[in-house]
Every structure is written in C-alpha cells, then in structure tokens.
Image (cartoon, rainbow, N blue to C red; front, side):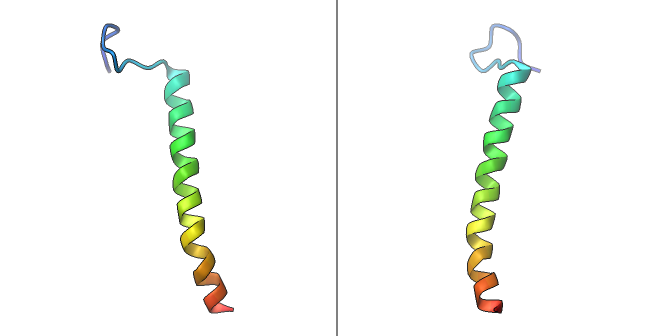
Length: 42
C-alpha cells in the first residue's frame, strides 16, 4: 500500500482501469499470436 503523499498513489478506480487496459493489451497480443496458428491448423 502506497502512502497518500506518494506520486505513485492511485485510487482503486484508477488501478482497476489500468488493470483492465493492461489485460486488454495482453489479450490482443495473444489473439495476434493465435490467429496464424489457427490458420495453419486449418
């Protein structure tokens, strides 16, 4: 837990937004990598 005076302090809402955007980017990268594999299997 970061202290309130820390420049890196984020609210729960900001943390959830960052996590969602991070997860979305990871999912996009995984999908990009899986598409050629699916095409190759077909």
